Image 1: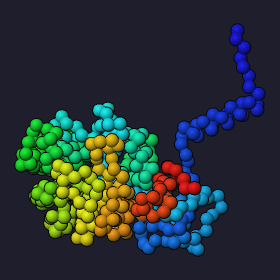
Image 2: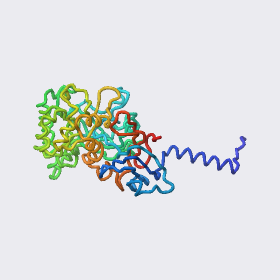
Image 3: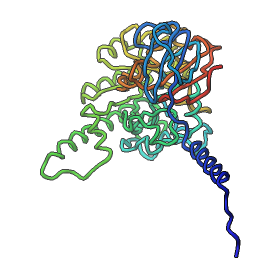
Image 4: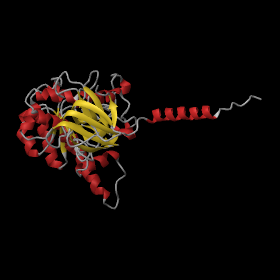
Length: 411
């Protein structure tokens, strides 16, 4: 018989402690009480605070003010920085569906089996552990609106996630944020039909009419069988899910505005490279723009993109937000902070650029009650910088999401 091993009381206690430690590592960091001190805190809810202090207790912001007003309580971990802003919001991306390696297995942002697939959900394809997600997080993005990319008449449903989640359930903020559509030549490049703009728009209009009929039939004596695509299109028609329409050419932007007027849905323009040509029409329609990355490659439908577009739209009173967008080459995404900095160098006021990365983006996405500014009770999402956020040599040295240090730490 093999003898049984017996542990002494000390050895048993040590083993239990080791197991508990390993379990805690697997479980991830716990929420803590953190104090951030900085030379300047941009709260985006008022004037910048000089010699600012932000207290975080668990997932939320407990207090914010100047060092003369707030003392750091005992037991709080203190992290120092030169500048602090709210967590940055990337208002349009495909990260988590598009991957860093540019191989077939990590490119899930566009399904090309059919030009209209409203039933597709980003939540079913998002990879919370994708390296691109951690990369944009390290550069200050704490929340990203991501999902199916442009290139189909209806690409699918987008979603909003925090960039710190290890699983989709931990990351998700809104599983169905918008319905992505495209008007322009990229559709005919991906599909044999539709081959022209007119055909694509006719197909889209017909689909929306079918959704109207589907909605009417649901209240009848013989309701139609459940249709996942029709369900989300009904949500679009009823204003529950905005239509996110990628349109770069001025004529395509005007087509999107006509569709919005015809069907009454909530519209958000994506890209809008030639929006400066139809600025008055966009403003009068009350439509916000998730403006193309200023450094976008100027070819195809975006060949007339300009560094100055964000400044022009802002001056016209059009709400804007910044995006990383989708790139067809490695690393598949841009950086919203860098794009905003270029816009600042080309006519967009500095404060407006910060707002477009934070509170204005949160309002556009319907999340301003929780994120976008540093205020008591909001999510504890902060970015700590070594200097001016829009300076080339400045580093994002610490990112805090939901009250946890998610990336780096300022020295």
